[in-house]
Image (cartoon, rainbow over all chains, first blue to last red; front, side, top):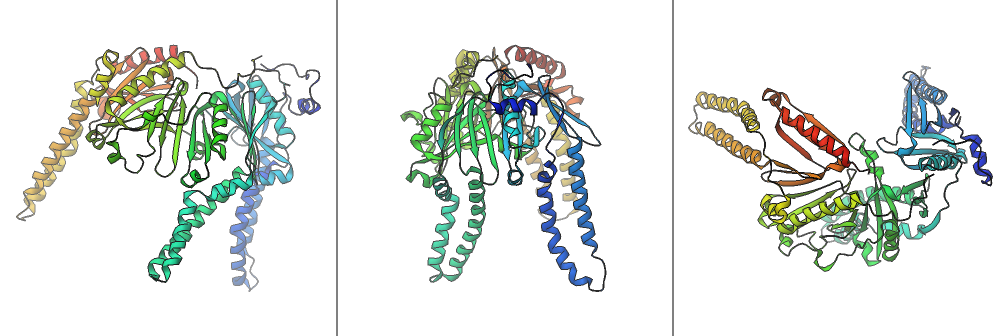
Length: 465
Length: 165
């Protein structure tokens, strides 16, 4: 898989410079890595240390030495030393068909990530890294959490080259192949992102309650003030959520390359991510309640991660990614068609559950729908926001039917389609019993057929070398 | 529910295999281990405390124990599985019923486990894992030899039909 070191003729100078940088020899990470890596620890210690030292200052007028200061300095020193040692003992190279990372001072750890199993390579530049011109390369491979397979940090110029090289080798191409050119698809205006985030129900609802509380203070002071107070509390929490989402999806751009889509996003921390078409397990079309007025839609994707059972929840969260944070419905459908050809997220007229299910699921009945076609299973659920999950039949892991005592009283049952990962499943809730049994049979049958002859990927993956 | 599935599937659904009666014996032993001491304790309390209502306590415990026995029997009877050409079908549950279809091609690995009571009765549980955490494909109460044979069969057929993510 690894080929000659010399770059092919006519390759851009950037790439040939990269060949020198990211050869097969062992290399260290950037010397400033510990600074960025332990910057957060430093800030954390300082946040705790400064107030407590300022406090103890008052008690130490009699010439005593501030003991806590020594302790904190020692902690910082140890942290810094640890960072430097960790940097000293970490080295990496790309050789023998694998990305190899060696690390650990007392317990040596040698990591080999087979290039063929690489699912995606992301470049992430946190704020401190951006200030110093550094970026992290994070390799998402089947069966390993992101935490262990990261190169933190390389120079901002080096990171994309390493990334391109890893991807090229993962696809079985020449080592020097530059990253396939990407075609911009959509760009989300920040002027649209912010109002869209503010229009989520978790922001609007407390605002409405707060207004009602202010209005009610004159009439019923206790109730009004109570409502206002709790609404403000909720608002602070959801405001933090909005700020975080804004920070993450700021300047969101999605583009398409030969093997998948690329996402560029982030305000403080810039991310450059890939989502290979073949790894998409499911797409979710979300329409929050207040967005319907404006016709806005959000798309999310779930990407394969082979072993999820031992991953921390935080990692599981990272597996699902925003494909587009907000877009008009037409744009979202167009984007969906790029990722999942022939998918139609509008339910056919007979996709709803039987009328009697209204009493079983009164709050979500209006959104419940499930149907399937030649290539996809669709399931729409939700109470105030509608959420449609689309699972390609070829990605279906298992199918099950379940029914509780109440459901049996209404002669309905739920059919669920499980996809890889722990987050999503397409859930056809409250179908007629007979229809549910029929769905169970036909979905598993169609999934079996499409596994046998998988449909082509959206855009043919470039011919493997 | 299994009735509706059987009706919709027709000949596609082979007759379900049931669990070993020894599993029911093991479950009853488990029930006895919990409920007989509880009942004796209730009886002692009722005899010691000379309150007019005291006989109600052991009676209530006995009724709950009988209810538990009935529910457990229903659960035991609800388990069933069928090996089809391309997938394994598992039914289970009394109140919350569940019929799972797990394709062999999606199996990642198979566990055979046996707890202390299971071991005492020579039983084992076979569990299939797919890449989906939601897949819950478990067959308890198989005779040890049957469990091993099932695991080997599944492993062989799974290898032949394995598909990537």
